[in-house]
Amino acid sequence: MLIATQKQNDDEDGLYSYDEAFIRRVIAVVSIIISSALPTASIFALYFINSQVNRLVFVLVFSFIFSSSLAVFTSANRVEIFTAVVAMASVQVVFIGTSGSNN
Image (cartoon, rainbow, N blue to C red; front, side, top):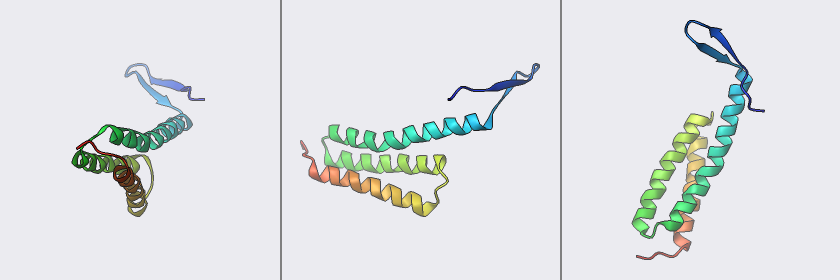
C-alpha cells in the first residue's frame, strides 16, 4: 500500500522523514505510469497532427522527452536508452508512414 509512514524528527523545523520502502514504491508507481503513458500519448497525438513536417518535429520532441525520462527514472546506460528511443521512434515513423495526411 502507498500510505506514508512519516515521523516528525524536529518540532522546531517541522522536518519529516519517510520510510525508504515507501519512497521506492512511489517511484516505482510513477515510473510504471510514465513508461506506459509516453508511447501511447505520442501515437495518440500523432493521430491528430495533419502536417507531415509537424509530425516529424513531434517525433523529435517526443524522442527527447522519452530519452530524458529514461535517463532520470531508470538506471539504464546510454546504449539501452538509445535502443529504446530508436525503437519508439521507429514505431512512430511507421505510424506516420501508414496513416493518411491532410496536407
